Amino acid sequence: MTLEWIQSGVGILLIVAGLAFMFIGSLGILRLPDFFARTHAASKVDTVGIAVVLAGIAVLEGLTLNSAKIAIAIIFLTLTNPVAAHALARAALRHGIKPWRRITPLKKGDQ
Amino acid sequence: MTTFFVAVAIFLVAIILMPFYRVLRGPTLFDRLLAIGAIGGKIIALILIAGVMFDRLDMFVDLALAYAALNFIGGIAMAEYFRYIGSRVRARK
Image (cartoon, rainbow over all chains, first blue to last red; front, top):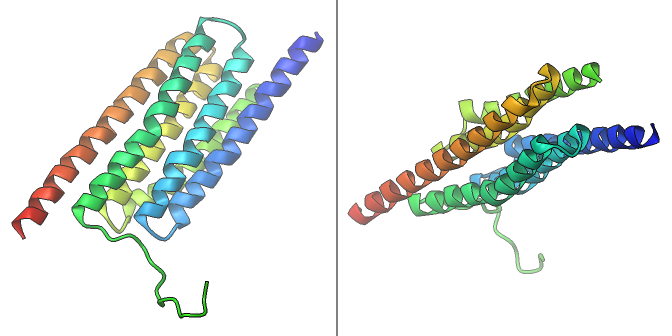
């Protein structure tokens, strides 16, 4: 009885934490100033969010074949999602998109 | 428990709508492609949540795996294609 409570509690906690990460990633894609800055939000934060949500679903499911498949999906996503974002960033750089800079150039005294 | 998963699914749809703005009016093509990739990643989580809601996780897990593979392959193909086009355009200038 207690074990089931712990299982569902951990699962719900992981899903809520992953949703928070995904929300931050979406906000970054929406709000960051430049394509190369947006790749950070899309590759890092989103990957962690998806992996944590999937881990929460696997914990709720228990030790079955489905949770093993979800673990495979987590490994696959963690490996491939940043690679896709990096390939897009490299293509954009080759395409001639300039990275974002501060609009006013720095003065001598500024850090 | 079902109420929790319905709430999670609604919140996920709300999260998915945020990069959709970037798809509709991204300044460059690559913004749109990046946002499409991010939406695909979130849809994997949504598919698994739907699987738990319908109590058919054995089927929906396979769907999620196939969707992840297709998302990655599509993103890589688009990136390579536009990298090739970009290098050709710059070589012609």
